[in-house]
Image 1 (tube, helix red, strand yellow):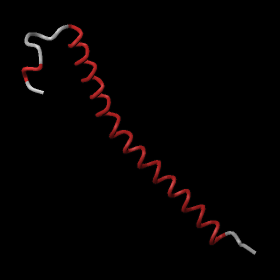
Image 2 (cartoon, rainbow, N blue to C red):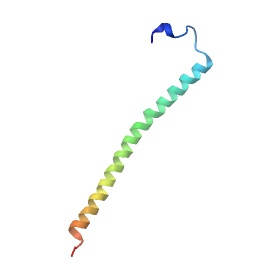
Image 3 (cartoon, one colour):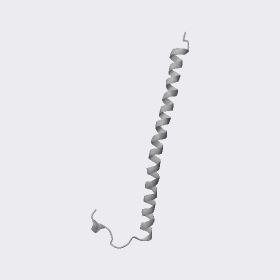
Length: 65
């Protein structure tokens, strides 16, 4: 796409609304991804600890006949 493909002149009100929506959505995603990475990591870690503790109890503490 070249500069000649765009109309010249100021943006219309609907174009401004679309740009504001794009900027707002981008700001929300910039906040969401770090939040999801942090909480996702914690959830995986907690799940791993629970699973590891369960396996340890089954293999070492509970007596199997």
